[in-house]
Structures are given as structure tokens and as C-alpha cells.
Length: 213
Ligand code: URA
Image (cartoon, rainbow, N blue to C red; front, side):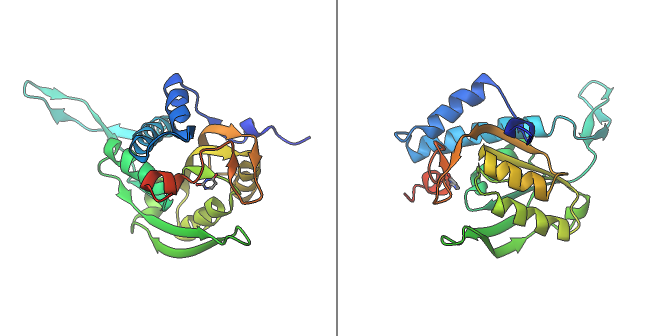
């Protein structure tokens, strides 16, 4: 018997997430509002993903006295998969302003649904970094698998994958190829259609975010 899909990912559950996701799914949501709600969900997912990141003691001076503080132990790298992941990176970088942002450009060949890499630019210290790989939709899982392969080939080991909506097929694909990479998602939808879209999903995340529908 196979593992249920919701055990392959951390399904982040919070009423705020449920409400923002409903706006994202609704076809009447304008691209301006789509951006706002996507940003909120990305930040909630990143909050959860960073929950166990290590910090180190960092003493500072308040205007009155010395006080103990904390700073990240490792550099942080946000790696959006172009193009739809860019919106998530923009939102999360506001929470982690010193994070480096790498870019991976992958497009789906419409016939094979396989990823083709057309751009890759990663921070020099990627091997030492805590990495959030960002893509709103985990559909076939091919792009995420390829992105993780590229990151690992560059020396990365601390990778977490964040997506808004996922599906059974993509979760299984990603988990079997990269079982060491935790997946954080706001929802697991029931189907993937023959064109590689998640159903009910929210449509084409990149088109809706950038208003290019
Ligand atoms: N990419 C999208 O933007 N939407 C889907 O449903 C699947 C992949």
C-alpha cells in the first residue's frame, strides 16, 4: 500500500492560509489581488519552513544596555523557479532581507511536459546556504526535481521546497527523486489533467500573477 499523499508533504494548515488560498483560486480575483494573496501565503509557508533553522547568539546594544539577540547561523538563499516563483521570492525576501536570490529558469515542453533549463544563476555560497526553492505549483514534479538536481550539483544540501498547491503525482515524483527535501504546501489537490494543470488548482499561476492571461 502506498503512503497517503498528505504524508509526503507538510500541509501547512492555518485559517489565514485557507482564506488567502480561496482568493487565489477564484477566477474573478484580479491580478493585483492575486499578487497580494500569493505574497501572504508565501510568507506563511516560509514562516513554517524556517521554524527549525538554527540561529546563533548575537549580542547587541539597545539604547539602554547590552541585550542578547539571535542571528541566522547560515546564509539564506531563495531560489524561485522562473517565472511564477518570482512572486514568492519577492514576498519572502521582505521577511529575510539579507537572503540572496538565485534564479532557475525552467520551462515545460508543452508536448513532453518535461523541464528545459534556460537560465541558472545561483549564489556563490549556495553549498553553505539554507535554501528555499520556490514554485507556486507542484504539478508533474519534473521542474522541481530538475531544479533540486541543479542545486545539489552546485553543492547544496539544505533545501526545502515551498509550493502553494500540489497534487499526488507531483508529490510522489519529488519524494521518490529527492526524499531528503522537505515539501511545504498549502493544499494537495485531487487531480492533474492531461495538459499538466492541477485541478481544481488556480489556473496558470505565472499568467495570473503577471496579468498575462
Ligand atoms: N503550473 C501552473 O501554473 N498551474 C498548474 O496548474 C500547473 C502548473
